Image (tube, rainbow, N blue to C red; front, side, top):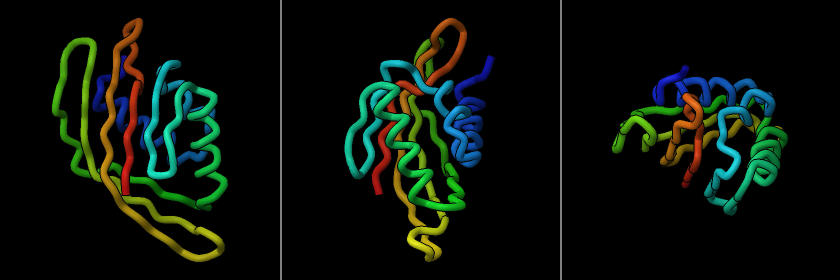
Amino acid sequence: MLTPLALMAAYEQATNSHDISRVMPLIAPEATYWFTDGSYVGLDAIRSAIESTFATIQNEVYEIRDLEWIALSDETAVCRYRFVWQGTLDGLPRHGAGLGTNVLVKRADEWLVLHEHLSA
């Protein structure tokens, strides 16, 4: 079983694989994601948003930095962090950064992302 910290590391690695089949098992079915470009509720909407990002930013490298746990219990964990990314957008090298907050829940001895809020 992954710990909350290990889940966040696995989530970062899965994101950098650009393989949606590695990302989705880490997300709770009733999850909600808030991104700068909109809100996404449920796995289908979240999958579509992530796949769109994978298609838009080529060779993206996503990094979670300064991870801080602001609440941690046996069933729920909340963290905040800074994120940075770099990749190719419209044929040009680009990069960006922002702030993230994730709410994790433990379901059947497995930690999952219930909510993610990223803002630039």
